[in-house]
Image 1 (cartoon, helix red, strand yellow):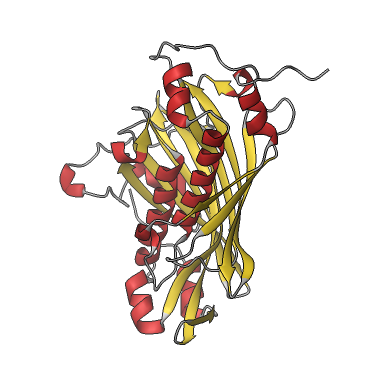
Image 2 (tube, rainbow, N blue to C red):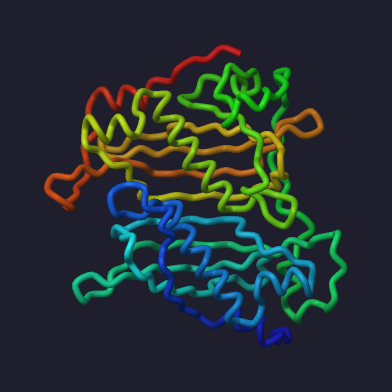
Length: 336
């Protein structure tokens, strides 16, 4: 016999929803296209709307039940280009398995092209409800919601810390450091990787406490940018000299633990594969230092390539030349 569930929880778990959204103009960085980060933002916004449509808004759950909405995993495959002027039809389909401790949703984004409905992105979004211990709930949980309430987000892998951390620099360091740093040197070891250490700002966080999924999307975008500049492939220079425009075809981030506001995040970006001279894949791993150990709090991957404009507003994949493949394949060594 199926357990009795509150109608709002049943709607979350069983009823598809759809919403029309426009990408935020901030994501229009290259030409008229919207970048991968903001395409992921649209997927997140669609799931937020799904909760509101079911009668369980994010703010309402926080105030009534002391539960914080957390996207703990976001996996997206990008297809057709998303235009800055597009109105997206985002369709959310619940696919949560029985007994699961996280909600799972498939999110498809459609746009209209010459009278046809075209899918421009598909995502899998997993959501947990984090119990906030400093709030006294004013209401009991609706029946069926309790299985998704967790006291914390994961318990990240611990790595022995064999290096002595360098004290964080003054504010003159600005956007953190890429080295020399003994902890980054330990994490990178002999990998074809790049490291970045930066203090997590409050505006990457939510619920007064921890970095949210959108913050890690920003970290992923920033370390990609820093990596390319470090390898002699700075985005502006490549645009000006080769007419290559960055493009992301897939991205994935999973939260393994909590990263707290103003903790120092050690992010390692490792090149894993270069595919047929068209695309390369990279893994992102994020760590904080706790109780004398490195704790991996997030992991993810991204598949990246370039488009070239062969005629006004007409794009095709660029083939990576030998110098680009060499730059992607050859790590720079930074001593601690």
